[in-house]
Amino acid sequence: MAQQALERRNNKTEKELVEKLVHINRVAKTVKGGRTMSFAAVVVVGDQKGRIGFGTGKATEVPDAITKATNEAKKNMIRIPLREGRTLHHDVAGRFGAGKVFLRTAPAGTGVIAGGPMRAIFEVLGVQDVVAKSMGSNNPYNMIKATFNALEAINSPRMVAAKRGKKVGDIVSRRENSTNAKLSVEEA
Image 1: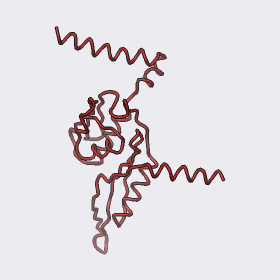
Image 2 (image 1 turned 90 degrees about the vertical axis):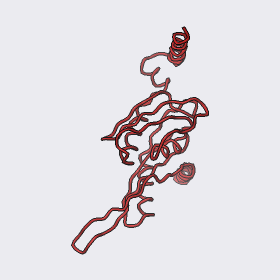
Image 3 (image 1 turned 180 degrees about the vertical axis):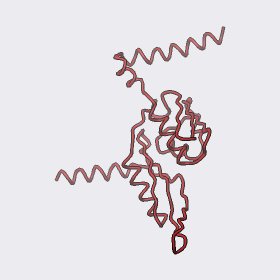
Image 4 (image 1 turned 60 degrees about the vertical axis):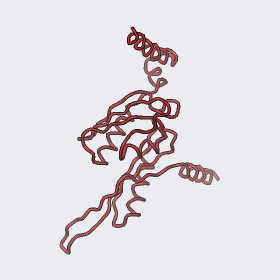
């Protein structure tokens, strides 16, 4: 009985997940009898509410490679805190190998300004307003890993307050006061 409830819960969460194929690559291996072709796939999976994962898969057929990548992505899901459920809490940079990315928060109505693999990540993550720039490598593997590196570095005000032993209101009010102070300095 408990197992049936667990299976229903797993099916329910899997139905809510959005899968996006980021990249597919044909790979040839030279062996004694000639070349053997296989396909490598990169897939991003998310629930559009702050949970996201990515995976890679390799098989002799494209659908098999995509299935393997999707299963790996579902296993490696992480939670990212979002501000107002639509953007990031603060600007952040990420790096993996030669891939470097910079992610900036954006006001409502900006949309997702990002290219290639980063756009797929933000769409399945549920981010509606963000400005992202990729510098360095445009290899989809490096860009995805650099973006995940940046996303893992994001802290919400609640997380910062818990680390410092303060209230969330103290931290958020400071952030608003610092932006107001900058505005008054620029006006003068």
